[in-house]
Image (spheres, rainbow, N blue to C red):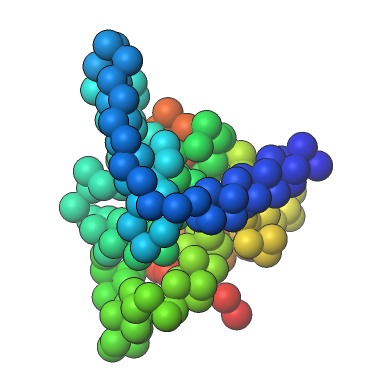
Length: 194
């Protein structure tokens, strides 16, 4: 229940932030933390704009630094949900590699990145995020108990185990990365709504 309330709070914050007007401010607090609040298409970047060279990287920073996740990062930016991936967490993200997006029918990614499809894209992306920390070991534990993973869209993803392999919503977990605000599980497929 606590995680559900936190998820609702995060989503409400997103709605409130997206209603703010355009602005640009820079603040330097003297501790090498620089914050730029800049809005594009009336959507503020919020904490996603914080540049901090001393803290451990968060989910968004790790994704941006991964050449295998450039399509995912472009999609997150097109949906204007960067700030969700930098929240305190804990958050688990199932991050499809570029090849997973390439496997979608021709033209799907390009179509989803269009401004008029922002809501559909946001729904698909938030389906890849779950409140809490679920590394591969935790996912295996959930599968043995017959539990599903609750996502930020309010849906549940089935977790299955085949030998040493873990699948979430049909996508195989091919790697796990610990970040400062949660866990990235690298997956080989885009988890689409049924």
